[in-house]
Length: 249
Image 1 (cartoon, rainbow, N blue to C red):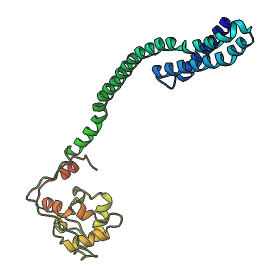
Image 2: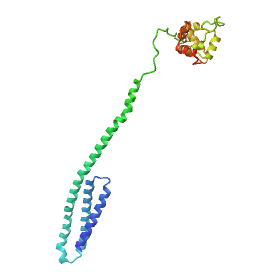
Image 3: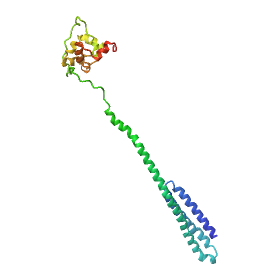
Image 4: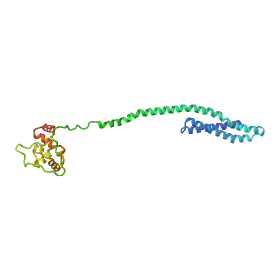
């Protein structure tokens, strides 16, 4: 009865230790889970031997049980030591392998991150270079007279004509910024010729800018005075050439 009781107790303790290992493994390293499982199995086995087998042996005849019961109880209690030693050794052997595997995985992750870092930084570097792209074509500096700057306030109305000269009105649409509607508006205000517009002062430009209904600021914005100065002397502009070819109107 005593031998069977010990065997059963240690079998139960081994099962409890295995279950404890399986439950702790997801949250602990193999080594620590195995050590704790062995400790739990030893404690459970000792408790079962103490509580169950001792009572069983105490009920046996005094001749065979009294001296031997204490030895029988104490001997199994020391028995787990040999079992735990190999288990701990196996766990210690397995731990370096697991640590090596973890280090390998960590190195692989670091290398992967290092490989991805340049690709992630590439758009940022490209964006930093973007401002260096050439801006819109600058207006070439030339000896052309500067356009009169529109003065603040209403300005002064330029002198106009009641009708175009005998030679006929100039085609004001050859000035960039003057379309068919603006040409009619300018004619109604008494301006038919390039030399009229070329002679406007800054105050006069300001007045016209303020009185072009729906087109305020067009005179100074498109430099009408500069363009009219060229056209009045017979010169051509890039825009006037396009108008003459019929590419605009």
